[in-house]
Image (cartoon, rainbow, N blue to C red):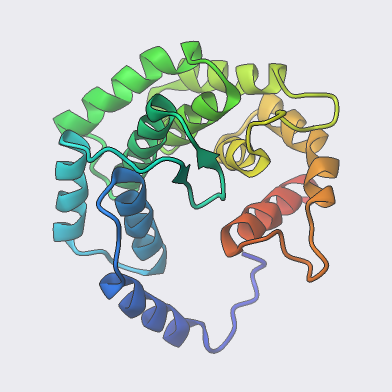
Length: 218
């Protein structure tokens, strides 16, 4: 990300990809989608894995509660957990260039229609993250969701009980003044969560924080 590749990066990517390809993975959408995203970040992904995610989207397995997302957010209601899994799957399938498959496009269209009307920052952030990779097709929904998240941000930069990193990840996925203003207003809240070792509690939270800080200093 900082433009300074390490000589060992290619070998490390191959090793991580081989490890992730065979590591156990839960059968619910959020887990399957996140594994697919991890693999795509590391290199080419087998079409069979993308096809399996598409089948899982069409007949989703109910996620466990609380659903622990890669961001560290814990979602303890059935509808919010189902939405988070669907949105993450749509993001993964868009990343895999399957957004024009009828089943995927239909769900993206539906998410764009209902997303701005969803209740709560967690649900809105899930919807925004799910749409952001194909934002060119949904500019109105993306703008409304971003503005809605910015509007309910508290004076301390947080979203109250809604997870800071879950909302921040969604805002980092879009461009625009509302998103940048909310990220800037949340900078102190983010800094307050940095731990003694410089991290933020997990690899994924630290990665979100790194991108967040880079966004504000670029």
